[in-house]
Image 1 (cartoon, helix red, strand yellow):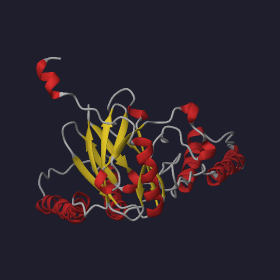
Image 2 (cartoon, one colour):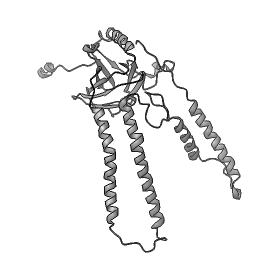
Image 3 (cartoon, helix red, strand yellow):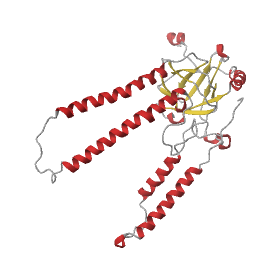
Image 4 (tube, helix red, strand yellow):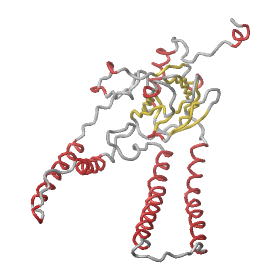
Length: 327
């Protein structure tokens, strides 16, 4: 494929450093335990404590990830490379998470206060109060206000996702058990379609940037900084098209043509997967998009026409007349 620039697997010095730090913390804990008052000796650091320390360190090192792919131990979303993805992730990180955190801490405080203030010893004669008008108004009005605060940016984000701008490139994406097919229209320089299957393990070459369960034999290619509209459907069961770095998620439903869009602002290879349980090989249905410059995209179109135009159509449709006559 013209213009391919395979990513090399990323080394993980931060994870090694995290494990080393966890081992150091374990040694320190054991040393402190041997000097505790009363002659108490901690002979070992409990496995769950060590695991928590290591997990915390690894989680911190996994926050920053390479765009377009998940990383082991990753916390949070993949790096966004489209305006929709950035808006989506900001909505989650800077609005939803603070609200969720404040509510969780508030409820935890209330539980602790109730346990401390209203236990049998501290409150031997319980109150017979059954109603409190102020509290009842507060726990009705405050959730409504919180929902309004969430709803306004949520509706704005939904409208940005659902209203597609004029397309520079349109691709029809068809899901089948268990692969994807991509069709490029003729009026946009295409006129061909191809199928994309997961690469088997014996064809995975890490030195070429291949990733097990994510790399495919035929990647979809799109130009950078162009609006790409995807028309998504299915030939059999319900699938779900998801590429997290694009902020794209839409169901592929038989007999229905759903639509989503993205505008990738960074070149590279971006992976996704089917996120609907669609059968026994659901886990082997990855999505791979390669974002390239416009010149490389035009060169790829020329090569793809020669490669795929002579091949049979990737989408097969039943013969309606044969079905009526029973042939």
